Length: 104
Image 1 (cartoon, rainbow, N blue to C red):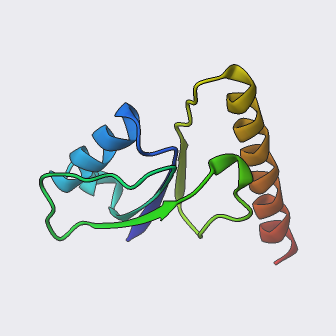
Image 2: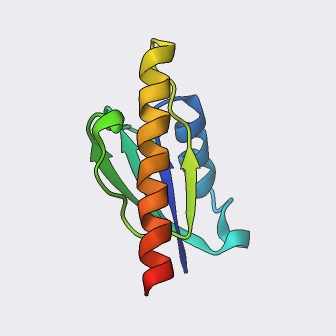
């Protein structure tokens, strides 16, 4: 089974993906777990056996990512400067992951 990480999952897109997953919508991609990284925890009405791990904190200060098969970047903040900072930090993390995989 596979894992999806959503960076910035407390907004419309993140909530919609998690809701869709709970209705077995991601089963065709064999995704059975979502790691949701956002500023705040999401409270959803319908919770069934689908695994969702929440990590709260400032996305622009993220140091590492948990291992995942898919990564969705859905960050949107109040200012474009903060968006750019978060995106650049995300790129740095992804480059580090890529280097680690190549060295293994």
